[in-house]
Amino acid sequence: MGLKVRSGEVFSAIVRVPCIAILEVMPTIAAVNGITIAMYYNDHDPPHFHAIRGGVEFRVRIADLTVLPGDGGPPAMERTVLAWAAQHQAALALCWARAHSALPPGRI
Image (cartoon, rainbow, N blue to C red; front, side):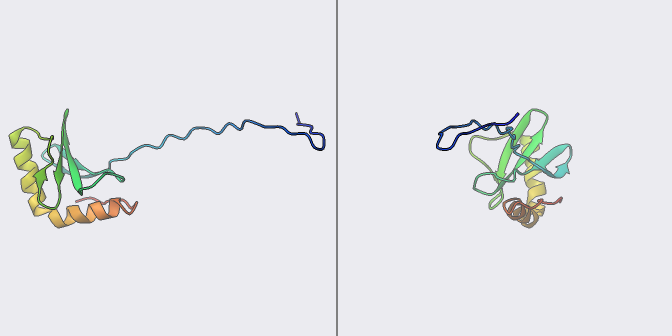
């Protein structure tokens, strides 16, 4: 089925483009005693990671290893995550830099 147009005729067309869903991906970079440590590729500053277990999730700033305001988890979970992060702070900063360069952050 073709479209015939006469010389000088003005027309418009609607072009339908399939919608592509862009998923925000949060790769796992480590697992610590059942706690998932992850980062989004396009996450906001300050550089941080997410600690997730069950229905609990909180964010930890990498620079000073503090739980971001408004976040928090059970004290034992926070202690476990912060102790692990203290041993891997440089690697966490490297993962953040990779993720913000659209590269896989890697695993710790």
